[in-house]
Length: 344
Image (cartoon, rainbow, N blue to C red; front, side, top):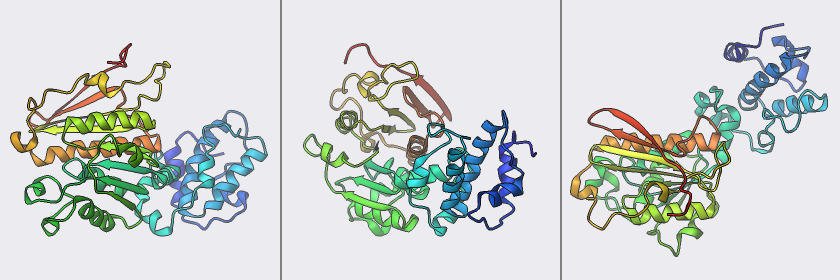
């Protein structure tokens, strides 16, 4: 029997065969000598098979994965509560052949795979601000295949935006930012549904706007909106990815105060990190202090990465950690913070 320890070589060798796959499970299994299933190889087999199953689920035929899991369940080789069993893989609409080719570099990643790509397709993400941070967030989430992107912004594109807000261009000056960003997203990925929210967020509309979204991305440039977004995301019990930039520096973190950490303790809130808003005028705006364009790209891209991790379950999100970026010194630092014992 082929050794199953090296899953990458194992899966890669199988993908390279590029042979049509039939609906008979034995036709799928015999070419790679996976039968019989015995002893401690079973765990490796199921895990390796899940990776292959996801690949074949996307690269060949959705029914192949159905057959694999049903066969395993029927014969007692895997329990329904086993982490390698994913009912969503069966319930989700298969990716089209065009989507498979588009997302091929995602699908071959064991941490993403077919199931992760379908999770991205199901995801609904609301982005506050189509500006310096929102531009890379929207562009990368669209390219990654997030199914629905909401854009909340009541501003229009101006010439001074173009130095850093790369989702807009000279031809969209004067247009609403939501309209300009929606056009760009359509060019990047026509499979993405865009929902425009041409309104300034306030206490009266943010809760209704958040309904139906899975994640909130805050790329706003003022403290009023940041606190508003943090409170609304906590009420809606959805994760918040929030970032900020100024001059040559930036920061970001992920907030999930409605969830608990590995020790059973509640995750921190935004106010555990920033207890009070600074007095008006204390922190200069980008228009007053300036901001170098690429720093918005660095932080915005990292925000998009955090969203993808939250959606697919890959890696460790920045929950309880504030990531700081010093552009001039080319340094990253991380500060850990915790939930306060009493509300701040």
